Each structure stands twice: as structure tokens, then as C-alpha cells.
Amino acid sequence: MKTLAILLLLGQPWLACAGEQAQPASSSSFTIQEAVKLALNNYPAVRAALANIQVSAAGVDFARTIYLPRADVLWQMNRATRNSVVGMVLPQPVVAGISGGIGVNRNEMIWGSAAGVMINWEPFDFGVRGATIESAESSLRRASAAADVTELQVATVAAEAFLNVVATEQTLRAAAAAVERARVFHEVVVARVQAGLRPGVDAARARAELAAAETQRIIADQNARVARVVLAQYTGRSPDDISVISGSLLNLPPADALQAAVPPIPAAAQPGLKLNPFVVEQNAAIEESRARLRLFERSYFPRFNVLFNTSARGSGVRPDNTIKDGFGGLKPDVGNWAVGLNIIFPIFDKPAIAARELAERQRQVVETARYERVIEDLEAQMGRAQTLLDGAQRTALNTPFQLAAAQATHEQATARYQSGLSGIVDVADAQRLLTQAEIDDTIARLNVWRGLLLVATAEGRLDPFLQRVQP
Image (tube, rainbow, N blue to C red):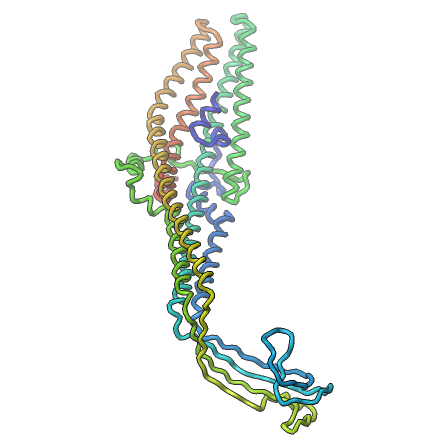
């Protein structure tokens, strides 16, 4: 069937056969370059990927703050009892600390206050802070590479959707022409039947061929609407407002573009694949894992902290154990200060750190295997794209002869029928052959452009392809 043939040619089973009447250029019409730009500006996945870059950039800024000293400022006031006992209380969040001499056990309330500043700075850390920043920066590089991957995917799908809309428009144009030919031929057959020059069955057969052509046009129009819906999904336009400018897509690409897309060296030896965003992203994943491993390797070291503290306290109790009047105690009037060095060594963290190092090394193995798989997949993708491009190019050189022969066959079959030398079956077959040839000729040229798009996608750069399409 005609529909199945076009589907196989385009490789998009649910879109490729759709079409619509060519529309005049208007302010709402756009080229394939503009369609890609609209998709990159409007599609949510692209916005999410760009937002992830900002998240990772904020993570780098946060990691760099660990070089700064920590300063905590405190002000406290309270109204509480003053009873205290001699002894120690282990660290816990329930029992409040009370200092001073042993007081009587009675319910006397006093004011208390405290104010102070604690500055904590780590002068050296055996590379922990640098490794932390490096890990955050590697996450940023991976997020940037992931955004490039998303943009490549969205741009590719938008360009394919645009090509499908162009293909469906040309398919519908051919279907409409087939309806017109069938209508004219039906009128001719009816006139001859009424004149007694042809049997009545010819009129019925001509009407059946007209109905078949109209059905094909209905299906083409239906599929054209689906194609516009898909393109609208990526461009943010309403399907009813979709109007494309095919430009040079209805002609064969320049010869130099075809030669550059199929170089004499095999896909596996082409250096451009290493620049594909998929490869860059996976390489960034490996570097991110290495950065985390370096951080773990520097975690089992003593932590040195220089401390400076100054504070003051106020109490509503005098040294003679009498209570001050009014708001006495709200003013911190007894001060202290201290400078010291704090050394902390997590002795029993070694097993936990070793386990995390082992897990991260295994993660590196996984990411490296994925990197190799990405390279192999891209090499296979490039090989398939170049093969499809070569086949599409050879097909496009052959379809003009098919179209010319179909046109000549249709003219001869029509003339022979009108002169009574052949039957209506020959004309019907010639009309279907001509319609199919018109569709095949247009789709063949579009398939060459689609092959170029697949090659550009495998390379990871759509700009050379888009620059080749002239408005």
C-alpha cells in the first residue's frame, strides 16, 4: 500500500504518511531553524536542565564557603530558679546547666543573661576542602554536559517533527492531485457511458476509484494534523497555527554536504564522536566519581580547629548569695575570653570511609563501562545514519525516472481509454502509480535531509545541518 511504503521510507510509523495542503507564508510561518530555536526556548526539559546547572553552581559556591571561619554570636536572657548541686551531668538536651555555689532548694526566681562570640577556623585540612570543591565542580560540569545532551535531543526531535510536517504536506498535495485526477476521469467516463460509448460498469469503477482517492486524502489530512500536534508539542505553538516554510528541503542537499557526511574513514575512527554531548556527559560522570573518591581518601585525617571565644554573663545573685532587686542580672557584667586549638580524630570512622571508597571505586567501574557503551552506541548510530543517508541518496537519484515514467504511463493510458483501445483498469492502475511516484519522489529527497540530520545527531552538532537548509 502507498501508506506503508511512505512509513517505511521515513522511519516514523505513525507520522510519516501524514500531509496537508501547502499553506502560504505568513507571520506565523517558521523555518526549521526557527522551529529548533522555539523548542529550545519553550520545551520544559530544557528549562529543567538549565535549572540543574544553577543548582550545581550554587553547590560550588557553597563548597567554597568552607574556607571561611565560622563565627557564632549568642545573646540570652532568662528568668529561672537558682538552685544548683555539685556534680557532673553528661551531655544531653533536657537538664539545663546551672553554675555557681550550692544554693538553698527553694523556688526563688532571678534574672540571668549571657552574651558571647565563638570563632572557629580550620587552618589546614590535608586537602579535604579542596577535594570538596573539586567534587562540587565536577557535579557542575556533569550538569552542564547533561544540559547539552537535553538540548541535542530536543533539537533533534523538533527537527524530525518539522521534516515530518513537510513530508505530510507533500503527501497531502499528491493525494489532493490524485482526487482531482480521479474526479475529472470520473466525469469523462460518465459522459461516455451516457453516450453509449462505454458500458455502465465503467462508471461504477470510476466512482470507486474516486472514493478511494478521497479516502487516501482523508487519511493524509488526519495524519497531517497529528504531525502538526507533535511539532506544536515542542515549539509551544498551537497545532492550528503551525505553518512551516520548507525552503530547500524539497531539493537535494549540496554535494559537499553529502560528501562531508559520509567520510572515507569508518565511524569508529572518526574523532568527532568524542565531542558528542553524550560522550562528554559520561566522561564528566567518571570525573565526578573520581573527585568523590579523592574526597573520601582525604577524610581519615585529624581535624585542627583554632578557637577564639569571648563571653560575658550576668546573674541576679550577689556573691553573698543575696538576690538583686528589679532587673538585676540582665546585664552581662562578668566576662571571659579564651584562645585554643581543638584536634579531633575520628578513630573508628576508618571502616565506614573504607566502605565508601570501595563503593565509589565500583561506581567508577560502572561509569567507565557506560562510557565505553556510549562510544559503541554512537559508532553504531553513525554507521546506521551514514548507511541510511547513502541509500536515501541513491533512491533520490532514481525516483525522478520513476515519476517521469509514471506520468507518461498515465497520459498514454488515458489517451488509449478515450480512443477505446484499453479498459478502465489500465487508467486506474496508471493513476495509482502516478500518485505513488509523486509521493516517492518528494519523500526520497526529504529522506536525504533526514539522513543528514541523523549523521549530525550522531556527531552531536546540529548547527552544520541547520546551516545547510536555506529558507
